Image (cartoon, rainbow, N blue to C red; front, top):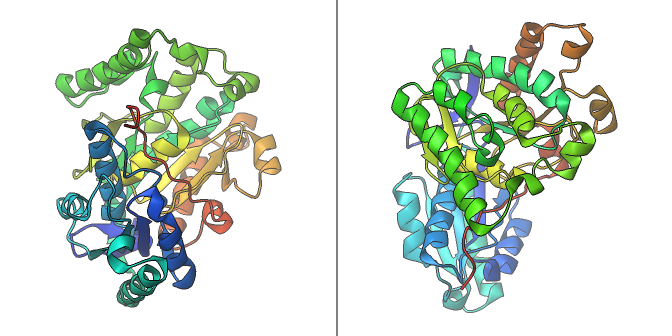
Amino acid sequence: MKINAYKRMDGRVGIRNHVVVMPGVLCAEVAAKKIVQETEGTTFLYNQVGCGQNQKDKRTTLDVLSGMIANGNVYGALIVGLGCETIQKEEYLEAIKKKTGKPVYYISIQEEGGIANTVKAGKAIAEKLRQEADKCRREEVDISELFLGLECGGSDPTSGLSCNTVLGKVTDYLIDANGTAAMSETAEAIGAEHILRERGRTPEIGQQIYDAIVKWERDRYEESGEDIRAGNPSPGNIAGGITTLSEKSLGCIHKSGSRPFDGCYEYGELIEGKGLYFINAAAFDVVNTVALVASGAQLVAFTTGRGNPIGNPIAPVVKITGNHEAAIRFADFIDLDTSESLSGKKSFDELSREMLEYMVRVCNGEPVKAEINGACEMAVNQINSYS
């Protein structure tokens, strides 16, 4: 199977052709936003951090944001700083350089002499990048170049019983075609860690995944006197009919299919190889979607039973539900309905073929509803307090 995509200088492939403008710190957002508003065809990448961080959170921020810019869906980027923040120009450019050689520029408000001068300088750079990006043309490439991110949120019982199961078959197809897929949501694998351990390509990989899940519960919750089950399943999950975290986890992992996991990566790490991977990241939907895109996913498949309209500024997010009522009620942000697997009208195999065909169209340029709605949520998880 083939898709039409953009080949990048660093060897990666993109299904979108973004020119990104990102504030290097939240204080510089006003200038970065003005540049985007005044430069047609640019994409704003929200950044709520960049200052007042300890070293661990600073490294996480650099890992995630550099991964977003390195994603194949991005042609080039402009970072707009303030000048006195914790993460400086050289640190941003060095972090990005380690992952990609694409064109990336940096300017700062204090150096340029105010907002108006910064916007003027930024517009010139952004327009130049956009002109260069517009020269790129889609080329036919094999579907093995696709990296599919796997995410679920606002789950109910139909998630595990229908849409995650259908998505799992698509995941198996992609892995068999030498493509790449990844799931994260470490906290929402609690109760299913023994199953994922058995799916490691090697015993060592399986144990890494198992340890990451167990450590998450122990270190993030138990040692601080918290119980993850006090807030997970969420009120919406419970209202939808999910009764325990383990039940939620068993449904969650269906979307990863049945093939062996080829590695366990940390939050913010860029995945270079082919195969199926686990990413050790938080379970918050926006953070998780960003984690997948920062690891290299050009497309995210997001399953939801209760409904969730979020998107991503870099990658199209396909919304899939197994709840027919949700598909009708939220028709303005749901892309695919797999509920016919529950009614018996269609088989899982039929629905997985339809899902794959739709994803190919999205890869070829068809917008998903999150893109049409302008949904482009962004968050970087911070483990420690601001200084």
